[in-house]
Image 1 (spheres, rainbow, N blue to C red):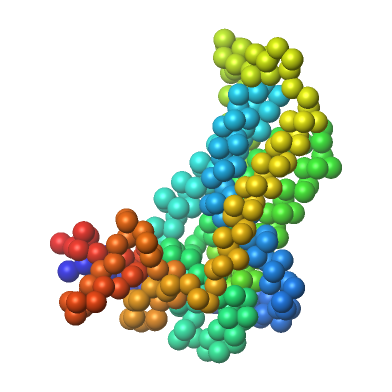
Image 2: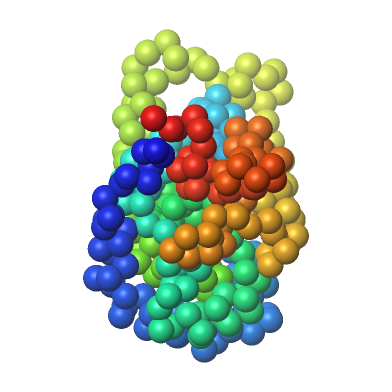
Length: 309
């Protein structure tokens, strides 16, 4: 017996599905009505800002920024915000809510005929985990709000608005691409915004602590005999961010309808991305016919012998 199959028949995710079905479908129809090739490419650009291939390098950049007094506040804000948002979304809420992706749960809904056309037209992208809240949206807002508040605290209100705008477009891209329910991205917006605010406040507290201790001497700019050219440093950071974005966006260009899909068939035919070439999620022969199948994170955990009684 597989314990994951013994979860309650109605999960929190199921309740959200039924409670907000009308709202979610109404928003889908709006995005479906404006779909075209140009907007699809724009959506894929902005969705890359929430991908882990962008977020993880930004976290590493945050660590580097902590070693410079002038940028320490930004570094700590990013680190704390990303850590809080990731833990809340991926460790706490997603496993608790257990909401299945719309391209799976809507297969038996009246809207499936329209939704499947929109989903295919947007590139038929897929993820391998649960849906609520949106991890991409959480990531975009945690970074955007933390960074925006740091700039505003330095009197740079003009540039501070750029980051929330990017986050909003990232949030919209997830619905446009049909990989999240609208309520998923609203959840991601709430978690990401709270994480960004908390990250900024914790950063202020830690930086204040630095000023009152010997740690304040940790400043790579002072260690350098010649110091650093502010314009050169800004240019290096911008180049690094462009490289991080390309690291996220370019691999996404090959994703879509030809991606390996989970081989689970039950109450729906799972369209989640299968964990192929992943040592942690190795192929399983669940029907004992000698042929091994690949599954997404959700169904691999449900069907793996490692989780059996």
